[in-house]
Image 1: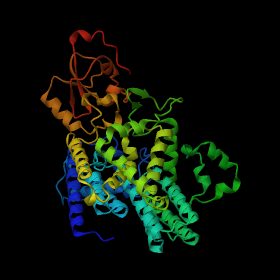
Image 2 (image 1 turned 90 degrees about the vertical axis):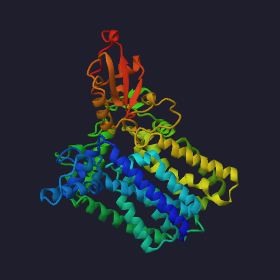
Image 3 (image 1 turned 90 degrees about the horizontal axis):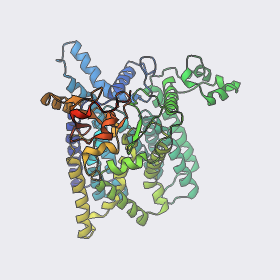
Length: 542
């Protein structure tokens, strides 16, 4: 890979822009609802205590959060020894977000490398810029959560796996195996990457792809290296906590969260209960807890019900079923229209220019991973609480969109003008919300005061605007925030209470009878209630 000096300058400028944009957002946004849970679990890992139930309930948190917790732990160490002055709460919040910002920059770089390999220099720079300007990638690439790490891991895993497919050496097999393994400590869903990798290997080996020299022997070597990398990385990340405990240990009375029909069947096979499990207990424990979350709808970070287009569903209800269109609707309203157009343009380019054998080891890897993620969460997940769960798919979108810029210097001027206009539209759309990126919605939402009618939860109201709300209340002392009962005058209500997502203080009666007159921080809505209406207003739902 030989990148020209001009392209390198452009890359560094885009990365610099991304760093500035992300740092400002990280500074401005208040602590979100579940950041503290991730940081606390990261601190537990740094203390070599990765058990998920020993001190709290950490069902979906992962060891990668130790990167966010490390600056806080170091700062506390220096503060207690009077080597540093105590940091303010805001500075500490930015400190725990630094690692995620660096992961976002790494994602930008990988998007550039992916697009460079597939479409050339101009497209690579365009994809990198689209990634840097993507509002959802900015929003969740500046928080101390695992969503950005997951996106980075998926894109990186597929990138290094593709390099192995094109040149199946031991060195590239080791690099691919290690990256795949490291992605497993970002989110539980990353385990699906191994299935995608196996499918790609089968297609490449048995269809005899001319551009790939992968043989069955080398495929077996890759499998061995990948398995060893998985066991090594998972054990290190989870501090070798109870590795090689027999299956019977997981069936003990104290491990009630493992009980299920499948566990009952395991008990009926005597020799299985004595088989040692080569990974740490908390790794398996995480899957068991998340399975329980999917079954019961309960989680330590769940704010309440699932909401879409004005309809509320309770995941605790045994008859609950998710919205199959949830992520399609979220994508339609929360991804910039210009970026959606460029993505479709890229898909058309791929259909016209890619042969199947090249597609399998290129865009096929990316699109398969994105499709599996979106379909699985759309059809089977109870925790439909935000577009952030499909962040890897949004990162992949920026790579595919780069295909529209393939051969950009040689394109006719009308196409150049249209592509440039779409990028400017994207920048302007994002700037209209900046630095409040979590509640971003595109121009299909004509009046932002009614954004709550479409989506809520971490798509709109995740606690990120508390500083703005506090300042507004200071300047407007007559405004009542989230009153426990209807009151006359000016009322400021959060989106989650207004929609009924938050079952601990719902204010749906306001949305049914009144219209907001203004927004505060995009996630809080201001209503004016006439004095004569208070007596007739229905009581709030408990």
